[in-house]
Length: 335
Image 1 (cartoon, rainbow, N blue to C red):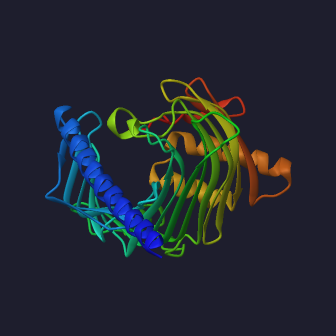
Image 2 (image 1 turned 30 degrees about the vertical axis):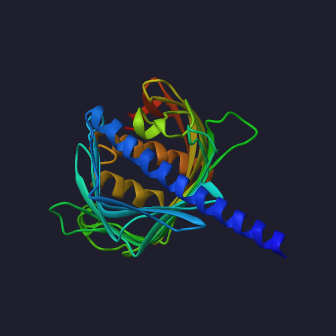
């Protein structure tokens, strides 16, 4: 019994020592990371860092966090932010965001509010912290541009990513689902001035795989974001009232972010969708009329005037419908 008691005491002391050493190492690591960002010209500040969770957790709580990358013009501010991990499994991290935060881009500032925004991240147990898989969820998310009282709201948001193990480290399978998305009143009034569509997009989801030029790891924040090289869209779908869009296809992306490949779009009530695109400015007026003529011909050949499969080609920096260029191809670059 004395020997058993001694073993228990020694094990407890050892585990306690491990926790305090780990907590000290984590705090030093956070401080070094913020110092390194400031040395690179970032705004990288927090008011306080509290590490708790003895003996089985490392719970890091930051208050008044501010990060701004001068290279991209992206910035983030939050009154608090938490990183939670089990002390015996520190590579599985839970990130918790506050109910209100601010995100700034070179074009606009956005205030985000949510009831519960958190992410589960499983990282490779190495100093590079390569992402293996992650799931982010948010409930009752609201996005409001600064100085604008017309928010975009989502009842439930889920974004999942998983590294494809059979391929290169930089190949990820992604999934997105937004439940009951309500677009901003300003945008809805522009594309649907007569109010013929419901307020809510009942379906918005996507399933795709992306090969990046490098893995998502700590350098994605510290240095530069990984850039897509190949995108395989298994299915993207959006439903807004009687309007429905589905898309699938595959494109390669060059170093400048210009895609090359093909995507097929299945559109139900396509004339109404085209009219919305015209009103919103997504399709220029000088393109919309000849595009409608071409799609009308396709629908007649298909024998269905309301539902249409539209094959789009991406080539030479343009989007092509058959031999006709209809728009400039989007630039697929992450800032």
